[in-house]
Image 1 (cartoon, helix red, strand yellow):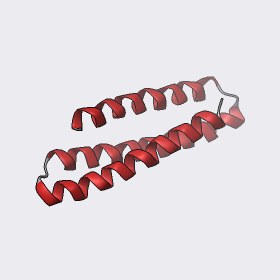
Image 2 (tube, rainbow, N blue to C red):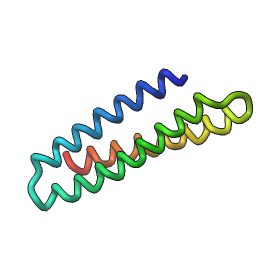
Image 3 (cartoon, rainbow, N blue to C red):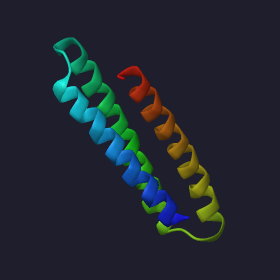
Length: 89
């Protein structure tokens, strides 16, 4: 499971980088909006990465509790990335 989450984080990183590159090429009025969204996504990604690190250090009931938080962070990050991609297509 941890390997799967790590792989998803790499995909999320790549998608965030694509949005960041899009900001570089965007019109001035869109650039700030895209950069703001990229910053929010990076914060969410960092939070998801912290949850993954917490998962690695837990076992038993504590692991299950942290896993639920990680699942939630992943869903939130995935939703945010999808929304940003749609918004700036």
